[in-house]
Image (cartoon, rainbow, N blue to C red):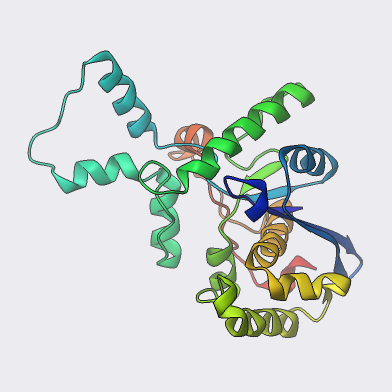
Length: 244
């Protein structure tokens, strides 16, 4: 299952993908997904990919806490580098090094609004399932970044967002289906061509499949502690065809 998470339900999409021997089909796509739908969808899926930061940079959290207490110690001579350390998570840097793409900063960009909703969803999932949701991707939920997935699979990954870019989105869907003839969008193809939220939810679900198969990046020993608190973006490490 994949979730393209926005701050509000109206721009949030969920996609369910069913897998069988040699192929997959999109079982359903819902645009305008509220919290109840997302929670139930995650609970019913083998693996769920959420396109949203699952945490904040540890240094940023410490900085805000120190600021609240009136105990901020500012390093000298660091300037912009110091602020960048507050803005970027460990996984953001890892994704940039691997793909050349720069994820939005959860502490300095508007993506913080969806992240607040995501934090509430994770807390609710933990309460309803009786176990905290692992932010490093080791549990039923994994953080995904559709642009990075598309790029690593050799597919168009830019310029398809928003209504005015419908032609670019059509090309992206065309290339995706050509690269994965075993994937059926079925009755939901029109929704994916019409809505970039729906399209990204399908890509999120495909990335969740990659994560379930162990075909994504995972934090190393020196990254494990940061990934556990900040979250970890799963980037595909093999071809799209390997998901079969």
